Image (cartoon, rainbow, N blue to C red; front, top):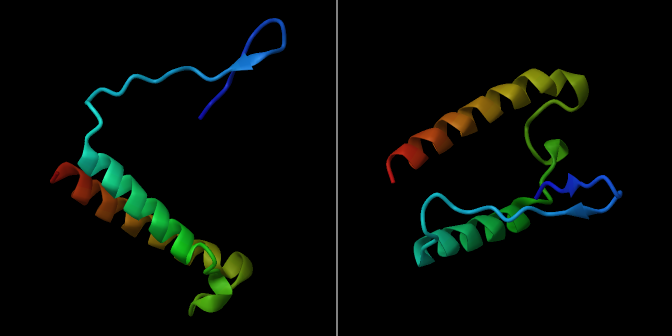
Length: 78
């Protein structure tokens, strides 16, 4: 969460008000997503059939775009 700096050098975290109420379904989805991120967080380029280093940047960018399209499609349909 972003922190805001004050003139005296201290910081605070602003409270964000959700535009929609948070439901149990939202919390369950967040928990499942967090669990999956932790589960697959150890995977790196070397574990996949992806070239390592600068050669992989085009592939990684393409994959990120694909994931973005999938996420956008799933969000619009809920």
